Length: 71
Image (cartoon, rainbow, N blue to C red):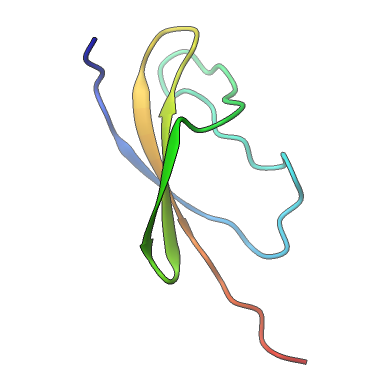
């Protein structure tokens, strides 16, 4: 089974609340629960592979990690 893949950039401010920024499928608008895979691209960047259970569309999101300044 092959799926089209898009990279959808996202930036999550810290601290992020659990479950507050779930992606939706760009094709059918279904809400994603958990990524199939993740990869640390650099110290400040993580990508997640998503596959929609409803329509089968696959896509990748990229999150930039913003480090908190020391207090």
